[in-house]
Image (cartoon, rainbow, N blue to C red; front, top):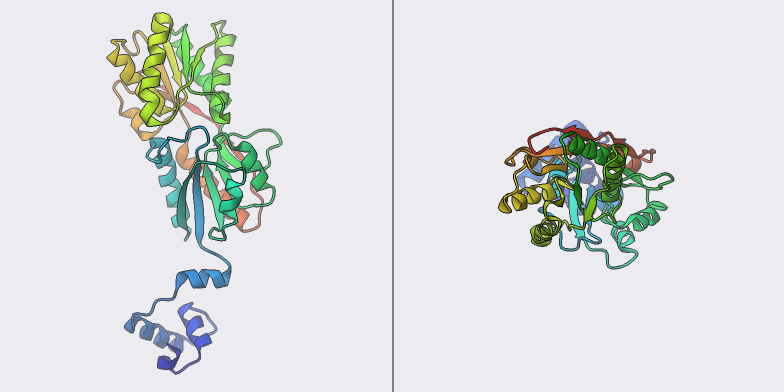
Length: 324
């Protein structure tokens, strides 16, 4: 291009980067020649020179939920909002579904040199790994719970308060024998269960029965069916750890001839778009996923710029529909 334009290579480079150091007419001539000859700068080379990749890693860590898919409606909803926030600010996305098989899996991602920052959709059971990486890597933000003294920046809802809202709604709707569907070893779901227990205790009701339900779609229905068969008529209320679990529970209850909400009240968690489409429509606890995704992106941009960004804990909201 320099030979064709009759200038040196530095001038071509600056002209194609729209640098003010090149005269306007020279810049226009070089850019026109580049277009005429089908010349496109190598974006990866340009990014290497600028020591900026222009790529954000969006990582879904699956610790205990190794069979869970990215097609999960919560992941897809969150990913859509993150993609909007990142691409509107000029970044590309590298999406990774990671089953952690070594202690340093996150260090391997952030040390690849391919990313300007990392967003984690969920903490899974990898809290300590995230804390360790955050000690030396600033542009890292996770969706999930926040604990006192936590090092890494996180954005999420107050899951304990959300669980309490669910318990209060079920009790107010007349449920007295309540089951919790969801494994409680991950921080977010454990807090939801704890909030439910607190709400029932405050009303003098028995502690909920807790049944492990995995978030993997290929086993969820069978697990829920077995739990409901085991509980029999001992339950008249269900708090599901996610909307996907709640929607599956609705189908299982219907298949077993149990009317919702007349015989069993059901509350979910997340308020994904599909929650308003079930029959009956799902009562749930809303996490404002759109606001949360924007807060994650804003915090990451601040950290990339060398600024500080604190964790954000949003207030959950009960969305009362037909199932409770």
